[in-house]
Length: 105
Ligand SMILES: [Zn+2]
Image 1 (cartoon, rainbow, N blue to C red):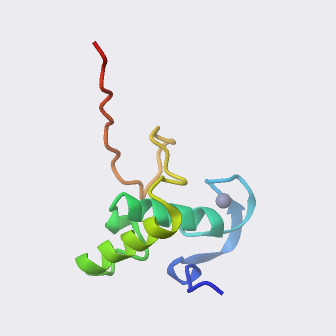
Image 2 (image 1 turned 90 degrees about the vertical axis):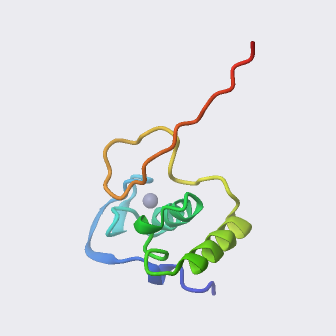
Image 3 (image 1 turned 45 degrees about the vertical axis):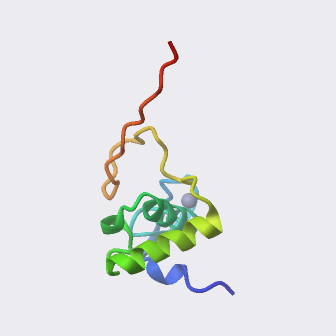
């Protein structure tokens, strides 16, 4: 068994459609199924969006960095759920950074 990724999520009793994968089932308070909620958690950690992360918002700065490093070491630095494009209005979404495209002359 993996060390409790599930424990960091707050679960509602009702079932709903997951915002991430559109599968109907039990969803966490972020409106995502267990799978997507964990992806979101990891994305938030990757993006240093500590205040939005269930796991990180209670941690100290050093612990947050360690958690982030762990996530990246284990799952890579690529975001899994949060895309570069805005996916409608969702609360709990960190502000996105603009990417600069380097133009070739
Ligand atoms: Zn899902």
